[in-house]
Amino acid sequence: MTPPAAARTFLNEQGWAGAEILPVAGDASFRRYFRVIAGDRKAILMDAPPPHEDPRPFIAIARHLKAQNFAAPEIMGEDLDQGLVLLEDFGDHRMREHLDHHPEDEKAIYLRTIDVIKALHKKPAADVPPYDWSEYLREVNLLPDWYCPAQSLHVDRDGFVDRWQAVLAPVLASQTSPVTVLRDYHAENIMLLDDDRLGLLDFQDALAGHAAYDLVSMLQDARRDVSDDLEEAMLQYYLEGHSSEQAAQFRSHYAILGAQRNTKIIGIFTRLHVRDGKARYLDFLPRMWRLLEKDLAHPDLAPLKDWFDHNIPDAIRSKPIVAPQA
Figure: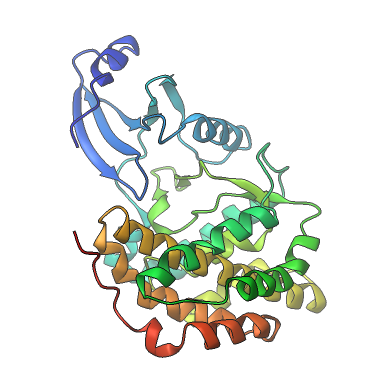
């Protein structure tokens, strides 16, 4: 977590000469973050090094969200050639850790996360690419591309694509008025701010898609257990004012997108281990399989459940992935 070579010059140009630069955290990408401190001023330095990362989508979505009165970090400075962005510092009061220490606040905070989603879905979608069939397919293919080889599985790839195309067809047909989909809306990307707003992070991959996706991201969290009762209560809260027919369709699409997202994440977490040596992500796979199996139990996913049952049986799903040989 050494600051990039260009950081000091960049900060000098932004009026932060002599500032202290401290590591904050990285994530599953090549991005890194540092806290910049100069006297009583604080900011966050994002290092998104090209060609691996492009900070322009993050900047564009941050400005879009702020223009719609959501709490995205203010962009204080940028150097796109170096992949450096100076951001408003939202502090360290993150939803995940707060709930670890104050579980009694869980329902109230989750209600607030759903309020943000409700408000976001009433606004025009950002000018971002569509969450279309090609993107859904690219993502689910991460499972046969990475997880299946890691488990020495030879699976029916054609059948996999055909089943996904069938179950996703009604979701795609309903996306005629898409909403902004942040895509990584979960407890580790929500900051609890001093003004009682929820600070939003990690939205650079936003697309225009289905309203159920970010609810799945929050309520079927890859890194934090959310009880079935809480998930159901939050779904009911989101669906207030919907007719019974609308609610049934939304729940179907929620299960389909839950299966799509959880399939993708199993592939991603396996890739992070196999390709990048980040073995800690394997610890999340039992939760991901539980969530995926819950979604596959919905009647509208029966064709896809059949594929999984025949190609990745329970004995494989619970089998640890062996570290690749050096």
